[in-house]
Length: 161
Image 1 (cartoon, one colour):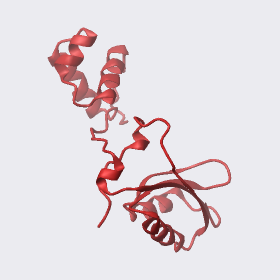
Image 2 (cartoon, one colour):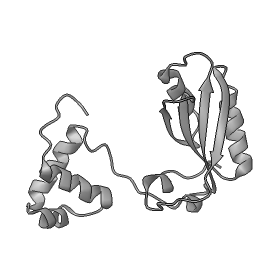
Image 3 (cartoon, rainbow, N blue to C red):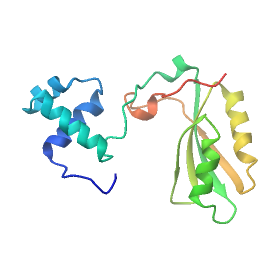
Image 4 (cartoon, rainbow, N blue to C red):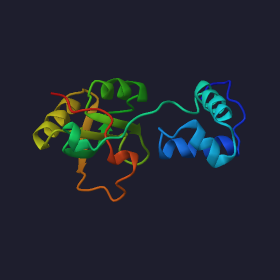
């Protein structure tokens, strides 16, 4: 969020909750549910976007429909203290990495990887491992999603050719 963040109240929270449940919900529907006019909801959404509270709107798609049939989480262990900035540069070069974060514990980072199949996943893993500061990786393949409506269960981009 930027430094111009305005007050965040209960109505803003209700608007955000409605948009997170379904970003295509109209301002009129949201307004009717929370007791505001559609114009007032639009003004609040615009402010929430301007202040960085709302960062975007996306469609979540069944991963296999986009060619992603294999999914894994990869723990990354680095030599020495690899700066998060350097890790971020590396993961941006791999479209198969859909999320990446530094973590506490033994690993330095955790990557969420989607691939066409196991062969493709292995190729992605090898590309990650050639980075000189990466000491080792540990992968865990996803078998199923216990909460299928979670954002992690959906895909936001198609698999590369």
